[in-house]
Length: 72
Image (cartoon, rainbow, N blue to C red; front, side, top):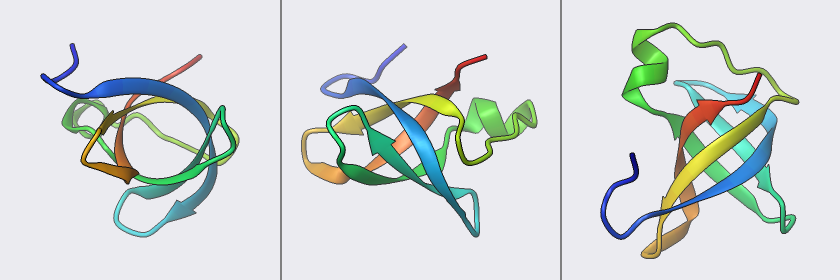
């Protein structure tokens, strides 16, 4: 469930960075810096470059987001 005022987009992980940060390329070819949501951390979901993910963003900062789902 999304937070109020945020929106979701799909993308592909391009680069894995330290401290569970990732560079994600969205469908419109923009690059966004994302971190993992708490549920993915708690359940030890591994994210690798090349994975398709859904991210959640706020309209205030379109360069950062949060990974909320990894597609199978």
